[in-house]
Length: 288
Figure (cartoon, helix red, strand yellow):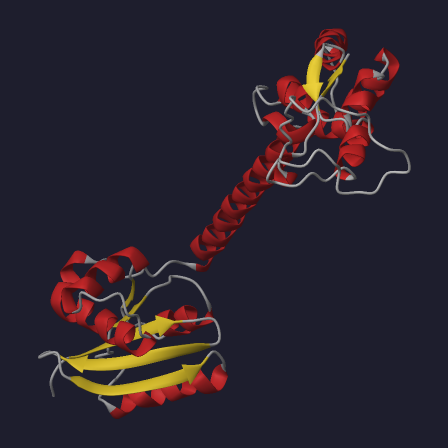
């Protein structure tokens, strides 16, 4: 029988399977579900095309994790986890258009094994302890990425209205805004005005809650100097007041959009006034 190669295009709720022979001809195609019945259909399809424990059909798939990969790897067959970027480059060899099809991707994965199996490494047969270490390492990596993503979002928000917090914590070693003392002080003073009013005893209590055990005076002096310095911050009360005065974008009218109870002051006919567009209505206040 000719040598067969299996390609599986992985998705969240279904998988497309394709079998090609050593000449590149497609022998079978099937879409299976991401459940036990789908895996049973896959095993039956492989068995119908000559899959045996002594000579299993190799499988190429775009992921190295998941129950489907674990079940295939447990059968002792060679499972190749192909990088999606590499699969995309192989796709360009067959078509110049950017049209993407799950069934065609499964055929491309099978052809990768047919032509370039020597350039890819099959998944190793790790022990249970090595697999457990892999899972823990991946979970730790995901946690670090999620923490950094949330820190970036927090930094973006603080830059809009609370730049003193960035100046106080962003350049600290070992975490910056993700440090426990930074989180404790931001929880105690979430606005610039509250931060400027923090006393030494309040700062000391916040640092103790964060787990700090030494160098309190040095840290308190530095944080107070930053929070009580003259900075440019957004004043929310003035922001709300400006939000009620909506000027037309054309800038030709000197009347506000909202009605007034008193008549506006008279202006000279020769004077011109340039109004800010509606999207640019912002105000700044110097906070000491």
